[in-house]
Image (cartoon, rainbow, N blue to C red; front, side, top):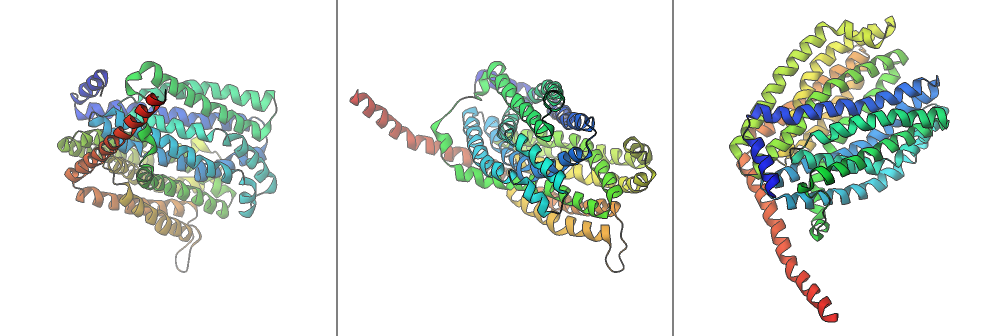
Length: 485
């Protein structure tokens, strides 16, 4: 590691664990909130057109994007939270660069099938018995947004890379700038050029490219010591081993996003008022989740850095403080949400029919937020330990075999079980997340942190052996080229 890189990491490690956690978590939380505002800005401009079909189309198009695009990209790139953090913690930023370049290669390969599938948005939505006009507009929106999928993948890779170097502020600055630019893009393509739903997608594409370019420039100009723009031949090797860890990381993200989208379909089957209440509850959950998400990514970086350095005691310390602190904070959040749920519901709707569904649902949401926060932070610790494989199996089973079937049964009833509608969907989510938390807790409790540190060391030694084995070949090639000249 370069001297500047050493001094930054060493200086950070001298601070108390609480300060280290907050210095990473708070910028992440604010960055996610600012990023969420981009979606809010989009809805604001689309609502201003007074076109209900277009508004519904943006929602449907977002479902396709989330399931077949964004969740896959974010999941695959999150493997860098494991590999780069451990490499940087071990004082080997060059290895972190190799992992970063592999992530870009894998992300580019994954982009191709995602791009192709999303071009068939209209037939997919028609197969789901959606309105033909809304399906067509949703397809237009997705086609416009499709060109922003690759920079979205690369942006998330860079975020993970910088976060592992203890540089979480950059995405916050970038999202603040591009959020303002996104409002301009929406105005241009919707009201100036009248491109309709396709224009909304183009606006999102421009914003994604802006985020990617600005973050690349930030890393190159202000933090060249991270070597974020270097390239080494080793990046082309061991890709399958990289993918073997990246796929479970993607499954962790994909299974949860898929569950949310399918639950929205269940709510739509209950009725339009139920769907409105469910969307409001989902928005509340999304906003609250920004906190656990920021803490989760901090956990990955901090635990990964510690295990990479072979400091098992500090990794244990971060694990305990993060999980216990999150539990206390979100029990308080749940109590506040439960007590003030009527006021919160009133912020989202004044319709008495919607409120009669939303208020009982928020009672379940209050409990859900505790387990959602806990599983997010546990997941961060598991990523730092490179235990995504085991975790993804449990989560996939909990989401697909417990949360979704129970959601359907609780929503529509079965035998003596009464139909609970949207509140039933959220109580099923509570059960699914509680089981996920229990499974994660069991993995962490049985986790041998010394073994995780040894596995991180073994991965680094394997990479060094590969590099050493290739060096004579490169020398021979160079000598041959010199002789030819």
